[in-house]
Structures are given as structure tokens and as C-alpha cells.
Image 1 (cartoon, helix red, strand yellow):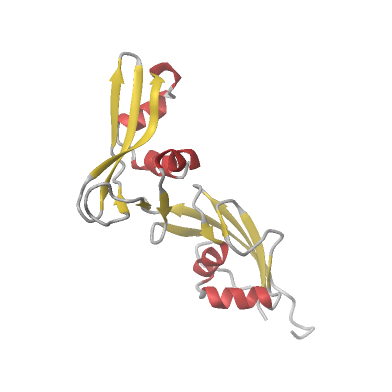
Image 2: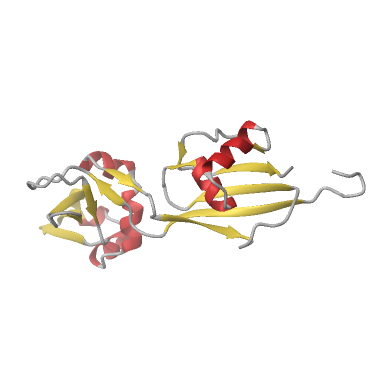
Length: 193
């Protein structure tokens, strides 16, 4: 870089958010070999006096068999947040997305989630600023475990391999670990050279 040209530094804020409900991975209990279920955010609420059982319904992608994923069991109606109860009765897709990102729900039901094609990155500003140094902060609106290099590649419009090469060359740095999966906020600095 020439001494006459000042270094241009810019910032960008990214939001990683779901744009669809993830695929649910679990073995189908019917006679088909499928391990993929889909949900459309439909809940079943069953009342036994003042106790509620609440399930999220999911269908096998192959045979269409329906399973009930336990959300709440024998829970007193007064202990449930009124907004959450309304979301259950209204079959709120946004509420289903929040519940699916809760590790307790996944563990209770023996499921894993496949977020491929179910998330996106919103950027502010909408276009990447033209700068020599780019400071990026990444915020996850939901707990979506993704490879950090995949998130960075998506936001920058690069391949994962290109992102890895930038990390190895020291042009892309962060105080957080950039390898593996993450579901929490992080930031990085990219020095274009």
C-alpha cells in the first residue's frame, strides 16, 4: 500500500437467523429407513385438569408418520408464560424455531437438527463496505450451531476454502476460535491485501 493512500477501515454487523425450520434427525419408528423429519410449527396441547402436556408435531420425510416431540410434560398451566401458551395454541412457527434451538428439547427427544438451507445472514449495511480493513461483528438470533468459517464465507461471498486460506495467512483474525461449530456471537477482522 502506498503511503499517499490512507488505510480505509469499515465495520459491518451481521445477524445469523433462521429462515426456515431445520430438518429433524431421528430414526423413524415406522417400518421405513428414514432419519429425517419435518415440522411446520404445529403443536398439540393436551389438558388433564390444570396440568398440560405440550408436543411439537413432526412428520417423517419419507412415510409421513407423525411423531410428537415433548416440549412440556404435566406442567401446571399457571407456571407457563401466557405469551408462550398463546404461541402453543396459535401454532407459532417462530416459537417452534426457538424451542428447537433449546438443547433440553433436543436431548429429551433424542433428536439432532440439520440447519443446512434453514438459515441466512442479514448484514448492516446491506452491502459489504469497500475497505482495506473490515471489522465484522456476528450476532446469532437463535442458537444455530454452524461452522464459523461457513458463516464468514456466506457473509463475504467466498468459499470456505478461501476463508480458511485467509485465516492461515493471518489476514482474517479473531479473539474467538474460528474453527469448528459455534452458536454464539463472535467478531473478526479481515485485512484485504
